[in-house]
Image 1 (cartoon, rainbow, N blue to C red):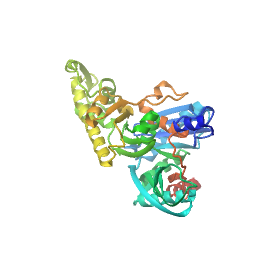
Image 2 (image 1 turned 90 degrees about the horizontal axis):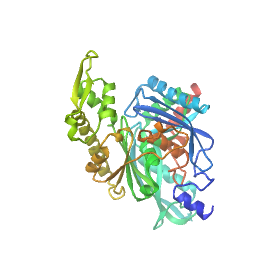
Image 3 (image 1 turned 45 degrees about the vertical axis):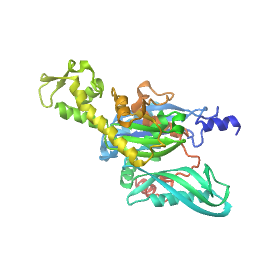
Image 4 (image 1 turned 45 degrees about the horizontal axis):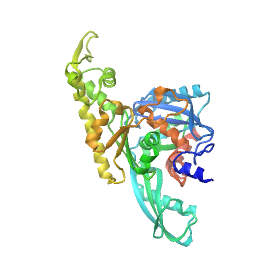
Length: 431
């Protein structure tokens, strides 16, 4: 590989006419299973290494709460409908998909592992053994590792090796970032997709996908935190030195805002969602007391409509969003990554579009905040290119090879001994 190609890959950009390492070949699908919507995109990687969407479909989510599947039949219907739309547009049929991981209360763990080499060259088998040891140490009852990212290796006393294979030493030390989730939630996810005649080809952490879709390369290197404000959850991803360092998830999202409005104003949920979308915000203005909004009442006749000032809507929304950022702040402080995460916060997800959210986040988190609009993808309609679609667009970036570790030693679904894989095979054999 020439020097230009090396520099292009180092910067996260494929050289002209080359694919990124780990990029998918042929047509592939991605599936974002969220609490409020299901999104499916079918794509292929072009010669310049960038994805092109061939088919797109989305449906309102059913049978999903807080990122977890709670009704297999309803979830199956919504997934089938979204996938069917994308398949019809792309004129192809999917057998599997890259799926976002938002179920099973995903958690991050970091492991520091020393491994004896004994004066010989480090082999890939050594690195796989280190990854296996990291999974063993991270394992708890009912948890399954789905991501294992090497953050760097120390060869004897020399730190900073990204790929130590072939180097001779006595001991190699590895710093690993592991992401795991509850096994039963993963099994329910796999079972639901099997009912849809789909396989889980890869799982990708939802906030990680949001970061791939919205961050620029300098932010990944210098340190940034992505906050993906979804419908049922708010997820966090911390990046630094080009690596994903930490993820977390909070069971609060845009749905909670809608529910607060419906309860506080005694209005139907559908109208509460409309109020939030058209008139919602978290920062008040002098005219808010004088701007009156019609609000139908639950159980009343259609002509029984109350009128409330916009200030009341803001007064209901602001405490919930403020509480969300306080919870995010607590999670970040508990992770102990204040130096690594830098001063930059990027907000994305549907709930991030409320007026004033950026300013409120800056006050609570005491950091520079910007709104993260996903990088554009060819072939997608403009309506599917906003912050609410950061997760599926991040999955497309992963399919194009973006964000994959230098060492492709991923555990989880690709591991033959995985309980999840055995379960999937067992179900497939009986289908």
